[in-house]
Length: 385
Image (tube, rainbow, N blue to C red; front, top):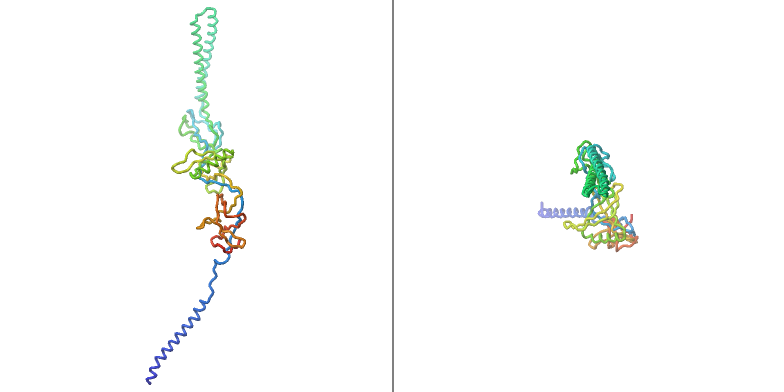
């Protein structure tokens, strides 16, 4: 082998290796990299029209309410107690029954009290007879005195005796009246109209006069009241409305709703404001009264209160869900005539249910976006669904 062939062999191998590397690099560039870089970018899902649902701003009357938490309270609750002792012999009503004032609820054994009444009446009858005898003798003495047949002292003594028997008669008459009154107490009557609670004694039990536990309770349910509180910063508005309502003889209305605020239970009127603010809570107690003829309100029931202060007439309203809050303040999205989203800064007023009054920033009929807000931007096209 010659010396020149030995020198050229490594050089040829090096050139061959460089050529192979170049071919592999070109193949990678054209077969893999180039197609990926030349593909068009994927479409942007946020660049097209946004489907939205809109509601036109409308003009209507909107009630201004104050919301509060309250409890139903009976106007009167009475614990019925016996005023005499004796065994209970008869029940005339059922538990939970509605009773009227003066209706007999139960009876206590009246026999001992009838005996006492008979004794008192017998004594009274004797006293009347003795008084009549004394009066007849007095008439006789007066005739004899005119004839100088009796002394003046004897006549005066007879006059005093008649007055004595008159006093005795009055005492015995009072005893009869007391016995008759005690007898009437054996029939226990309802002092007020209302609904009975669970009775605390059964027939046959010995009843004690003025027992602290009582016999049964009566709770007035019609009408009925609700007590609730308002914060101190709402006092001025409530007092102004309350005074104006009394001057106009149109009481402020109060609505009572259930715990979930899904059902309106009753409508009543505001009757009373407490005379001082509770310094520990910064609240004022108010009382409303409800007719409650259908017993929709129950004593000690929890209720949500809506106190109607006034009514905004012919005001622009929109759904509360459409209102947004951000660095620029309170605003809504509207869709203009070119189907583009426009941000409109607004001034809001009172809220009633799902509607809010707009005092400035909107006109009647403008389409306010209530769905699709999360994808909207100023000037973006909107497709109304």
